[in-house]
Image 1 (cartoon, rainbow, N blue to C red):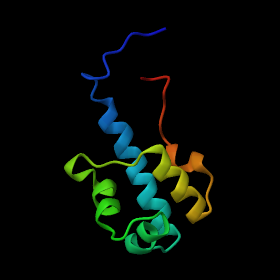
Image 2: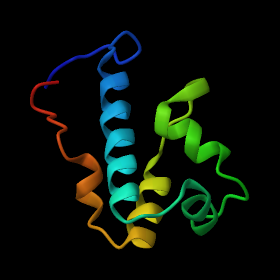
Image 3: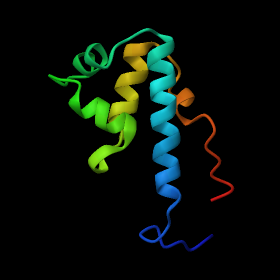
Image 4: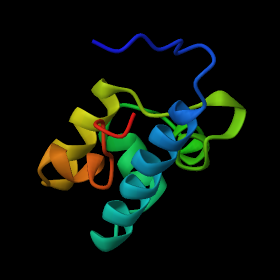
Length: 89
């Protein structure tokens, strides 16, 4: 088992960045606007989604968001984690 100080580890930023990029890529490939996706997952406006896509103001997607987005966009949830290697952590 590895001991990691996750408070000091900057790889979280890379992790959230990859997920956000994958969300944007999948959303755009499905030709779905931020507003439509935000509404479909229970948000009144696209503000949160837009901020989470660019990691503005510390916003990022959590597992509930990813789960809902996968269902709405009809994709395998694993697609959002494409490119993430936990072994290299």
